[in-house]
Length: 332
Image (cartoon, rainbow, N blue to C red):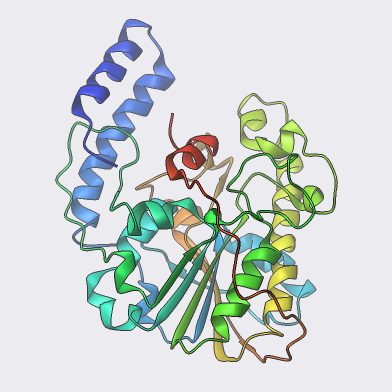
């Protein structure tokens, strides 16, 4: 978000005084991010989605190339899984670099349905990376605002994150992909040149059982915390991650029967580390291929009108983006 030299110095000082090696490395990484973003905000590294040809773009959050390739045989609409290099290794970075003034003429006729809280953070609030304090930052972002998009709908503002789960939902911002699909169907039936739907899965928490009425376990809610404590390993995490991916792909299967689009692309904003470098999740400015390399699948869609969702969503009276980012662990 904003340059936080004082906060960074206080954090670094605390790490040194407490001889906390992990915290010390963390704050040194924040300094690196400031330098990195000062460069990549001007010269993004990767392929911007608006340089490619598509009618509808379906963004899976934190989806690895190898994971999509593993489950691809289960889905008729995935013939092959290619890849591109993303312009970000986090959603915050991806939004800031993707929605650039350079593509304003395309964005004017684009509908964006997003379940990711960073969409509103960047496009509504003009809050750019880094999310953590850094002593060095001279970034120059050229991002559009929400007013430059034909239609922008952040689904966290809606009252219905889940179909059949309410109070037992782990955090407000985690959304049932079927609801995001319904909002995409509504937008897709309007007169926009392009449609972007940003799903929240396979990003943690792993909610594949919760949607079906099961109770969320602590390991499903915070799987990477358990992995870092060595209470679960890759053999436990990988099947959970794949099931979360299947959850969103099942919903996309319904979307493709309720949308007219000659060229549909399934991709991701960034990938995910699941034990690589001893890390779990995703972080700003990390050029690891499992973070920066994302799937690129081409398919098609025909509207058979098997779903007729309500045109108008229910909007929450309160929309606290910072609270949702904190619940997800992005803000400490």
